[in-house]
Image 1 (cartoon, rainbow, N blue to C red):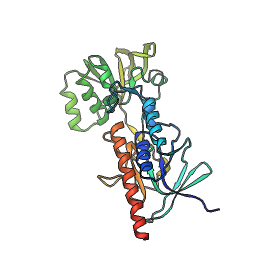
Image 2 (cartoon, rainbow, N blue to C red):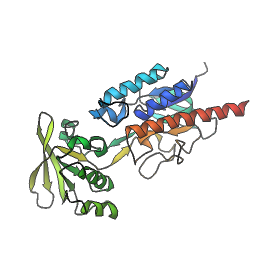
Image 3 (cartoon, rainbow, N blue to C red):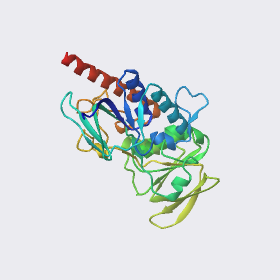
Image 4 (tube, one colour):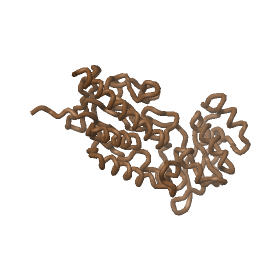
Length: 317
């Protein structure tokens, strides 16, 4: 029996994956979407989303993902709660891409990769305990909730410096915990931190625990790794800013990745180095990392995929 070759397979189910599905389905590409292990992506770990247009009263991350999924399914997107474990992409224009979910083989003319990125955490049990109650990995997403309050930022690179300077505009005080005795951030970012009055930098300090009541953060417990002195800082929010890891392991050796593992796309498009393979959302964007930009790039990927298929059809005629 000849195996069915799908027009469009979408790998990943955050805002970019579901938006790609909505556009692909409306273009009659009959997309099939594989959610992966975390259906809905990073947004499902977010309690309140207040910066996505169209939700004047705000919305929870999981609810927004359900809304996007419903919309995609309304146009007959087929959603599979499975993880893609292996891929073999064709290098030929018009070639067939092969993917596997366990032992199940899937064939597709176009593939949209929207597997996102995962925020790196320190690995403390307390991070999970207070997730959504004061622990965050995104100042742009959650900073507003700490207006006029004191917060801690953990990290030493550009991400930490950017998050801290952003939060300093909203919060009464920002304390940056830097593990070593120097920043890894660029000189420009360090300069910005040093010139912001309400930022205090604690070098040689590490976060070792978080304390609070009713799953809400009240104190950061820190250690000076030179003197071993343990102290607490009264804060309402703790922002872990030690970077993100793109979820691209399964695509390594297939599509071109940059030095940090993000998928390289042709500027101004979602095209990868392979014909018929597109990337959308945080898997190819380490700059903006917002639900709205991910959704926009999902739309781009579906439109790029539709154009690619239309071009193949024209060449056949």
